[in-house]
Image (cartoon, rainbow, N blue to C red; front, side):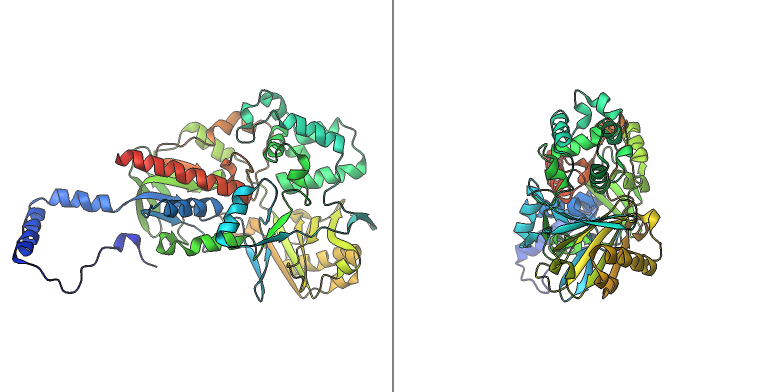
Length: 492
């Protein structure tokens, strides 16, 4: 990889100079020699990039792509991992097939990521949901016709939709009822509604998968802001049919980041964690990495807020921002598995591959087979505390559960993939952010505003679809525009 600081315009091997031209070059050399401080200042200025981007997930790579399209070439992308994609990752199943270990779906209203896929020439296809889903409770099994949703109470959904209209998704703390909603959990609100036991499963599964925690731990204000992102249509947030889990990315979701990275060349530096950021108030900002120091006029920090705690800032960040980062909920790393079978045998039985356990390690299993269904795949979000940490043992236990739900064929997978994000690397602290009561009203206002030369990006900062790939793309677009405006203003 070429170091951007070592790139210089190279002169041709031979050059035909006139006498006047030669004397001009000589005079310039004498002048330069006589003014070393000016030359040094010019060299230092050339070594300062316009923009540095920290993080090569959807947000950082989108920002980089926008900079290039705007004609800006003076930037670099620094990524701590040895890959791009952030919280998206593909399991390679061979022969050009993939199964997603992280974020994977897009749905109605998520136009930013849909536009990105179209521009990159990456296709999409529907997430399969037709047929009966399997509900497991103890040793009992029930096959229930699926409508592509988790079957929650329509009346309660409508109540939440009406409340969500009062909670702006990008700034829920500005809601006129923010204090009231943030003082209780979603669980507190549901407890007053006398929900039937069979409906409680749907609410619990939905909140845990989307919000990252049991309803008893999620701020009602936060949950309403998520519903607001989905145009205040609850099923658009939670459902597969017509919802945020409706559509898959051909080649796996990480493919979008891989495609964006291909155009960056040596502007992308992998395995380059940022250790320290200095002089962020007035600039140029000094960014310290194990591979050297990068200096830039503006910095896009495309990281989840708790990851910023791994960087030393000199001078320290403002107190509110520091406190927000320290207290940001980062306890939902998630674990996702994939069982691969010779065929999607469950479809022949009229089953859609969905498995939900009332109590057990399977939060939700679903059909993740390729578009051509040349073989079958069952993916699952699992409860890590209820599953062996050993991958082989975990796979066998899950296969037994699938056999109860789908048939004995499930006992014989041809491959198994297990990705525990909590153990994957030190740069994935949480997959989603399960906001507890009281957090947003106390710290939310510190999330968005730039600080000195630092521009905050990442899906958590999105005005809509925060926490989703779409939100990350939107935040990248916004950050690139902010950085270009800032640099243009400083050069004017």
